[in-house]
Amino acid sequence: MDFYRILAKARSNPGELDAGDIAVLLDPPDAAAQQELFQAAYRKKVELCGKRVHLRGLIEFSNICTRNCLYCGIRRDNDRVSRYTMSMDEIIRSAAAAGEFGYGSAVLQSGERNDRQFVDLVEEILLKIRELPYDLGITLSCGEQSLETYIRWRKAGARRYLLRIESASEKIFRAIHPADASFTGRKDALQRLKDAGFQTGSGVMIGLPGQSIADLAQDILFFRETDLDMIGMGPYLPQDETPLGKMFPDQGNAAEKRLELALRMIAVTRLVLPDVNIAATTALQAISPADGRERGILAGANVIMPNVGDVSRRKDYQLYNGKPALDENNSLIREKLIASLAAIGEQPGFNEAGDPQHFFNRIKKNERI
Ligand code: SAH
Image 1 (cartoon, protein in one colour):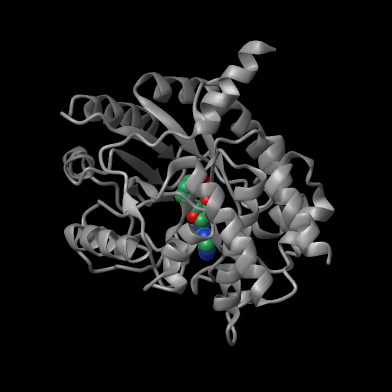
Image 2: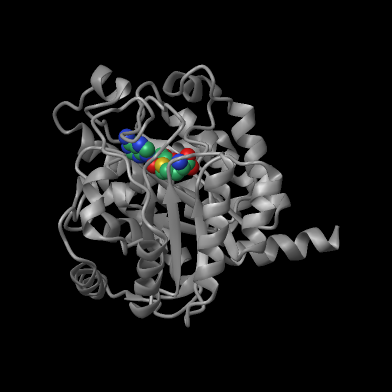
């Protein structure tokens, strides 16, 4: 059967997979085939980094946003959200918690702002984090910025950056963003991140209205063509206060289906790009709180981002419905994570930077050219 023939090719010659092959892998004929897909991807993950998961303490430091993405709960026009920016003290305390917890790295995420004050604030945060007695690998996720800004933030100590393309299909990208959002602009920003020397990550939402298996296959080709180091993707989740959420509310078992599709995207991405870091994102956990992220690991992901921000902020940073652990304190989150990883035979990579191997391979390759 086609599926198993292509799965064999994915194991031995992943570089030769084309869009048609990837689409076949994303759509296994039955549950047994899907299980084989997950197992093949998990084996690649174990080859890459063993039975360990890299951790990143997530700090959602501001929900103020100048963008109006049609799916996002903190979009500019959602006036039901009370807006905040954490104080410098609160941010640094959260980063210190990531260090104390042994997470080895932290992600600073926020809405998008391009004003001077914001750019300065992020730079200042990075410089202060440097003074902490922990060697934290810092990832930023603060949207599209100029090359100059990216270079400043890189110099101030951030070394990774996440900027999702959201969908590599221009048609879908346009359908889920307001007219002033530019598809090529977002791609250009990814190039600027590489030019600034960042370990560069992107990703998509999975199960968007109108999105087909062929579209998702194109997303994976986009990851390969863009030579990304890190992939962060998760199921799309409708948010009640957004235009897209109102237009297409979830019905029946739509969320569970999207979770499975997201796991298949993780698995196929792992097979196509064996040396990148792939996150088992919070959106997986939102659909299946008990085991969403763990299923992500077993499908080939190797990074988890537990929250380290103050618990009181969480209710105001709901990108989608069903955000998990809204009232769990960070030590409890850590304990539960250690236990749930142990239950699948995995352990946290404490006090490790957890850099993506692909980044070093990419730099070496470019030096040879
Ligand atoms: N403003 C920053 C990062 C914050 S949003 C940026 O633009 O990069 C982080 C990610 O959350 C987005 O890239 C998007 O993929 C995801 N997200 C937002 N709304 C979502 C929803 N309704 N369902 C699933 N994921 C969502």
